[in-house]
Image (tube, rainbow, N blue to C red; front, side):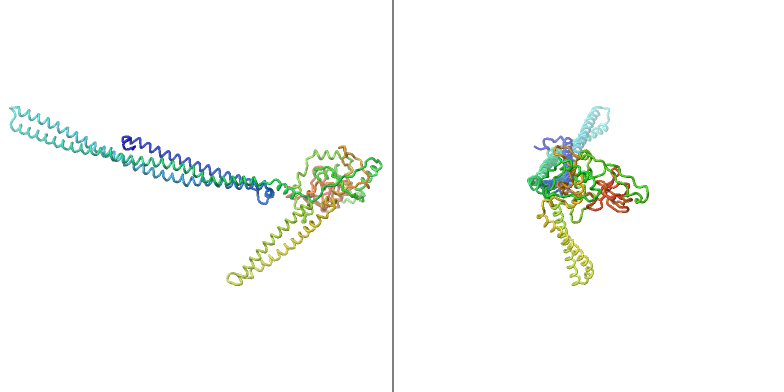
Length: 612
């Protein structure tokens, strides 16, 4: 089966077919190129997706990745990154092994095709030239034969005519002989050219054209084989990365299997455990004695004004008021004034007004009213973490529960030890450098590192002192934890003094067992409300942060519940802005805070706290 013998007369069709084959090859190259672009785009999108969900450094998200489920998710993101890399490998291999190779092969194929068909056209032109020579020789022979016949007929006519002279007859004879001679020569030339043409034609159709068409056939078959090999490579490139992709998927599966729910639960315990113990039983309070209620009400109303009443703690801790209610929010509702604040004094000096401006006399309200107000109002604090918005707590973490404080102190000690190790490494390196300078003075001045060595020594000494300080606090916490009594285990040092008076002042509004609320007050001498009524539920809570400072413009005697006394010119901390009711919440120290009229103070809010 050969194109040269079967398709000897289909030169033009073969030319069109081979051009179509090159177009098919270029179309396949374009297909592979677009596939590589898709792979690159897919890999890029996978990498962006993995990067998008990676935890940000030095952020809260990074701390969450200590849980096994989050670690498994992080491993999944890393495996997806590797998975994207394999798609980049597919694109790269297809570009190198298919697109580039086929593009180069197409150029070679075009040149080879052009050469073969140029040779075929040349052979066709040669045979056409031979055919034209044969036709010309044939026409000349035919013409000479006709002229010889005419010359012979003329001679015979002249020879038969008696009136013609002998000379004219001889002339006609010689002319006829000449024409016959020319016809014979034309015949010989025509015969020679015909034989030559037949030979050339035989060579053309049985040798030259078959050879050329065979080359074209070989070229076309190589093209077909090459495109088939490229398709195999196309599949092989994908198959080569399947094991690695399988490993990526195995890694995701392994990460999923490594999730340990019990370990995560233990980490939650370690993260939020306070170290306190649950509260004890609540003592029975007897409200059946009217005389005791009357005495309690009168004593409680004078407790703030006299400043002499002190809470009496019983041997057993009292129960919580309302579980799961934010302590600071509840304290704010129970203790903040509900009447408008007094106007500032008319005179420039508050001494003109006896005892300063009168603090508002708040009317007695049922505790149910305030509790309902709390339940229907929008909470100011959404989570314990929001309490940190104003800045850090005390250096010794005394605002935290014991267990959390111990963990923070241990972390601080470890951090300081790492810093000391870094300083020691720098000192050792500088010491070695100094020794080199001493042995080889041309490399540097040994005295040039003395200043830096002295700085490192001072830094290490400071860090060691810090370590000793935090280790002392840590030893204090670790030594106190096992020996804490039932009551002290349930107390938070930060809120101990702060909550004592507030809880005592609002203890008469306790919820009754039937779900209603009462305004009746028990006798203060029989009230046994420890400072831990609120701390039982809110061990992990921190105090409200300061959001600015204020200066007292006038003296204010805070005689009512929830207020605080200030002196003119006194500087205090602002912990809650005026919410529209005319009162601002301030703090003097960790144990003293309350409300003052906004018009009595000049507030300076911190810009950062205001923005946050």
